[in-house]
Each structure stands twice: as C-alpha cells, then as structure tokens.
Length: 109
Length: 115
Image (cartoon, rainbow over the protein chains, first blue to last red):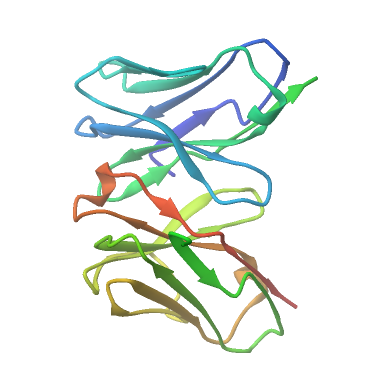
C-alpha cells in the first residue's frame, strides 16, 4: 500500500535463526496492525495482530512489536523452520486496510 | 465447510471477453472485499461491500463491476478483458462494519490469465 512501507522485500535466513520484518505507516490514527502469511499458491492468512493499546504481543515463535511514536511495527520469527518460508504482509488501517508490499522469507535448511 | 469460497479457481480467456468470478462466505460476516494481487505479489483492494452496500470503490476501471445479491455473496464481473487484468483475484470477508480493524478471511483466489 502506498502509505505502508515494508522492509526488506526479501529475506533469506538459516534454519534456526531469527527473522525480522519492519513496517512503517503514516496515519497516526491507525490502531490495528495485522500480519498475514501467504504460502506459495495459497491465500493470505492472519498469523498475528496487535492493537495500539499494547506494545508487544507474542504467540509461540512469532511476536509483533509496535512503536506508535515512531509509527512502525515489526514481526519477529524466532527459531525459523522451513515451513516459515512464505510471503509476509503487514497492514495498517486508514480509510481502508492498506497492505505492505510483502516480504518473501526463505528459510534455508 | 469452506469459509470463503471462489469460483472458478483458474480462468484463461482471450482479450476482449467478458468474465465473472463468484465469491461466497458462510461465516455470517457483514463485509466482503475484492483484492487484486499482481505478479509482484502486491495486494490491492478493489471494492468493499457492507451488507450489500458498496463502501469502498478504489480507482478501478469501470470495466470491473461488483455485485452483491446478498451479504454472503460478492461477485465480480469484468468486461472487455485486457492483458493487464491478468492477476490473482482474492475475495475476502470480515465480521463487522469496522472492517479495517478486523481479521480478513481470504478465499483461495482466482488465477486469471488473459491471452
């Protein structure tokens, strides 16, 4: 989305290492930040989301952190496994839900 | 028991033809969407309907016309197909009216190839 910037566009990590994807947004009123995972040939699916009343949320090996002052939020994947290989999208709501351009994560065995 | 379903899954057609894609959700959601995902994987919203009413209409050529016969269905009709229409089209739904703050449930996608 034009108002949601996502970096990096590609990320290759060794199995077992961590992966971090960062998104920045422009609308300071945004208060909901989801992350979607899209495996090859499949549909995007929500993996984790965070609302602006918390700074961090964790679900097993996945965590999301939010910095409202700096207007950025990040996805952290620890102990990466081959099945984590996918395209990951962040999103931030404005008048509509704007998606980042996606990060292709490849986990090397 | 598929939550959001789309038909067809694949669509190969000639330039200039007219085609439709159908979408149905059985989640009882109030809001449905159409997204276009191009070859670079960029996901862009095209339309959004809430309880059969159009609420988002992005800058999309008027060759694209959505139709929502009821809140469980949102179809997409495309007239005079062009090469640039080739993409994957995803239907999605979410629970309520504040859709921008809710989980989006995507359909499996329709892979459209215009020759």
